Length: 415
Ligand code: HDL
Ligand code: ZN
View 1 (spheres, protein in one colour):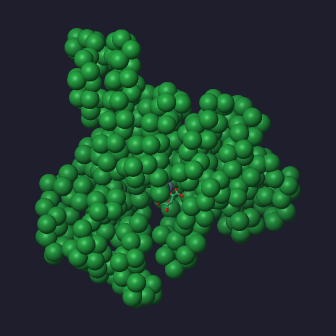
View 2 (view 1 turned 60 degrees about the vertical axis):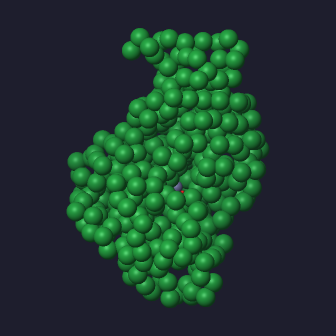
């Protein structure tokens, strides 16, 4: 390993960066995948890949004549067949979501050049959930991933209540949308779980919500709490229930438990409800809200990701002002090569290594393979250019330093 300590020539830097990105096992800090113990909640396989809500949205653009009801009435297999025909066979699959399916198939050693999905489906039938998890994590170069857990989900909660031997590679995250958004809508669900909450945000109700947070952070061993918020989210606010609940319940509990509070800001829910999961859109959020929260809660770490490209630069600057603001990932509509490149370069230039460049946001297990392959292909050259800039000053860049930095960026637990 002596060579790792040797200063690299300019021409050696790209390969050294790719070696580090290809060998440092990553920690994926935001996914919607599940430990195999959750059964059908763990989505995997070709039909789940093809019916991912990103592709459903693209199908309706290709087939303006297709009624929403007709599509939603189809079986998942029929939906996948239709998507394959319309977005892959009849048109080049140039979108990032289409390309991702092809990357997964290629990395699995499967030939995607087929109009008939039967031979591909036959291969997936030979896989078992546990075995396929091992295959996917190995191909993705991921050693650990963070789930998105919701105790108010009637399918998920029973698994936690029954208990199961946890796969240490799947960390828990307490997702708060269903418990805190659109108050008082969550009241019945929280009461049904034994929390004595009422519509009025009384001292008792706030205490019971803190009890819910503590109970479930403990049960799932939450590494952080997360909530997605609209572009209209404001702090402080005289009339926003979710702002009060975050300030009086979530932030204090995160401080006491020493875990980050993640806020994912900028989603406009169901602008087209007919698209169901694919119906959400994006809006520009107010960075002052992030700055005021960071100022008022200096002893809480805030993992912040925002959905609008227009918020990316000001989030970097807010993070420069507040060390407890940690930008993470190129979220959702930003998780495209052209934007990952721009955002990662901007973050390296303004924040050095003090941010988390990416998460997969994978909803289907197999997507880990493509989301990380595509991100490595973008982040690698951006990092290589930055190290080349350093070398051009006479600074000695070594393979060991690059590996250390990649560990810090993508190989560390949620801190
Ligand atoms: O709220 C979120 O965590 C988002 O990532 C949504 O789940 C979104 O629907 C999604 O899947 N984005 O990739
Ligand atoms: Zn997500």
